[in-house]
Length: 413
Ligand code: SF4
Image (tube, rainbow, N blue to C red; front, side):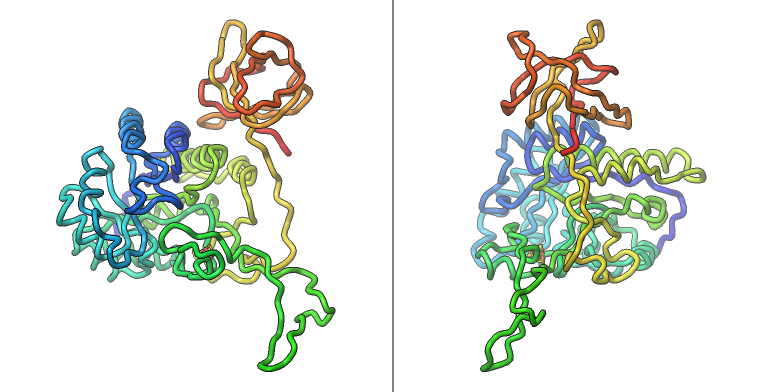
């Protein structure tokens, strides 16, 4: 098949668990967002998205030249497929750009009952070779989300042998099982990982015992007590240092994991990858991954970061079995609601407690970050206050550089 050398700009695809996150992700550079979440399934319809939310989200995306995809990637048991045709027609008619599905039953229903709605194969279907991608292309699918377990060499091989669109995860949480094909959560908490309900049981702490048949159980440390509780949590993926290779290997869509993540996370991660992709596409020859992008990702990291399966099968270095490096923690404290360029005063909505004297950081789309110390701030009655304790309270403060509506503010914990 093709081995296209002309570099194609990949889309940056961000998670959007709510309408606010959808708008934030697009404002911070996402070319597309996918909606859905733990509550999302065919039965629960759009989960956090009502039909009105979807209409508003699609209108917002259209205004900004972005797309909205809907994930409907549950494993479908008998009876779950009832109403699926209506559901697919409804999302098609509100202007959703594609639906992400893994179950062949739903693919058939969508193709037959909602013609015109593009279908993407979900990562839950674990596509790991080009024959599989060709199969789904021949079934009429436009895009395949690769399994997170493919290597970079396999991505290259797949691209050489098929022209179907490739979407690949480039940032976010990994699964200790083959992407969600796991019943640990079902067993531990009766929440089905294959229907969007994973309770992340692999990341819980366990005590590890040796228990020969018929014998007393003994701790594996032989100290009567286990020193370090055992966990099976994989570290997270970050491919920020490998953007050129992903683009050169023809990945069409860079997917960021995390429908449940905060607007602080979504804005930060989308912003970084947008900047990296733009920078590379402007001048591939002289592209360099900037340290400030990596630092930025660490500000919202929740675990260690690695490259997943792209360059080798993860070793115990990429599992959170034991000691872990302390990760810098930042707190999202507010967002800019207005800015007066005459007086250089910003109106801010508080999202977490902060006080006069705190060192805070403003950031917005692009990389115009700056730090300042809070010298003074005022409540809505224009009274001077020394702290902002109330969630969502509105306050004003002078800022040292121009800011814009939608800029965010964080501070180190
Ligand atoms: S419990 Fe862990 S391994 Fe299982 S689906 Fe959830 S994240 Fe993946």
